Length: 261
Length: 240
Image 1 (cartoon, rainbow over the protein chains, first blue to last red):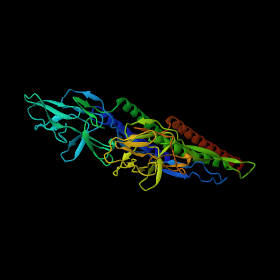
Image 2: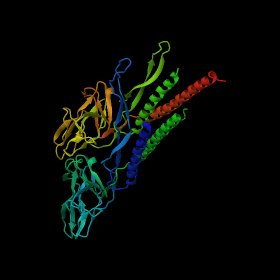
Image 3: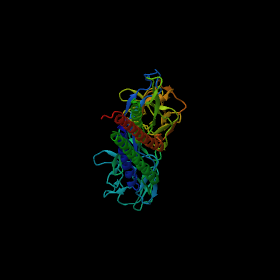
Image 4: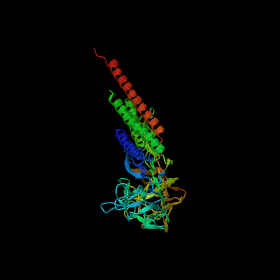
């Protein structure tokens, strides 16, 4: 019976769905995390009767055919790149993008990765780095005698040097945009990589057209909506149960068959 | 004289296929753009003996329920939900033209709009839609116009069918056939949302229970018929 294996594909797909939801819930407090969604597709169909075929006895044309499907699969897991919750931290090196854009960071391999997690730090040379120690691209160095760091909405970094009255511009935090954020590849550590599906990175200045603004002293948390995740988990669990009922029901039908004498 | 057995058999065969169909609907409860299928049974009169016509049952076909599914907001600029009877036209990597209600689009390496399995999304003229290099702000209006920073990019080729029942599902949320696609202007497009499955789980579960119970009653009927024949042989053909 086909329905046995169809039910099994359904259970397997719902299991992956729960795994995706579990990862969202686990990362509800991760800054810059973007929630994911499992996307389902139906599997191929077997043509039992083509639409438009003639019925043998009367010659009438069948208005609709008969195609039996073979179940479901998880086709992909897409990421929702919507704005996460903003948390005011008052830490001068915490920055968040309000709107579109990613901070480009330089990986040790020379590649550029992109992140929304703006928990910046300084290393021993005064370079601005992320939590994992990757420097911003282009790199920004804060002089050792700088006392006050101000990052404005356009991403310009101003510092107060020693006893000077005027602020000095020491760099510019650039932002990057993609045509299709959902096509970015997640690297872990809140980092994303450019792929052919995301389109090429477009670099720009915060506050310009189509780019968000940079907010200092604010962190972007995850965009996981815990209520919707829990609801989705309940739905997934019920769907899992329904698919297991399909298997049970098919099994009962087969046992009915074997009990005919 | 053995008609009872054959009638029961015809119903059991039909019920098994119905079960397969119901299980496929339940498995695809969360499939984007999925349209549920429902079995149609038909009385099949076997008129060998005109005085005593026998009615068997045949699963003459399935109809697809093309009602809209739930709209799920995703806020991805390349996700669209179709509100209405239209379908999105796509061209599979092997060149076949297909239609789908799954409006999840991506950008391929040639900067063309494509579906997740690599099929190209077609525009109004049947041509793939190519985005300008570096385009980052895509807007899709309710009538299917795609525009970006530098102005209009293209128009989604939304089509509908005179007889959507003749569409055949081929998996991956795609349909083929359906006769000539007609340009559709009444379907509205909602950007940043996807159309979920239109399967009604409660209906499917009740359908499944009915199938299972009917299957059992046919089996019981076959058993009774079998007992009757056995009794008849025992009683009538007693030998001393």
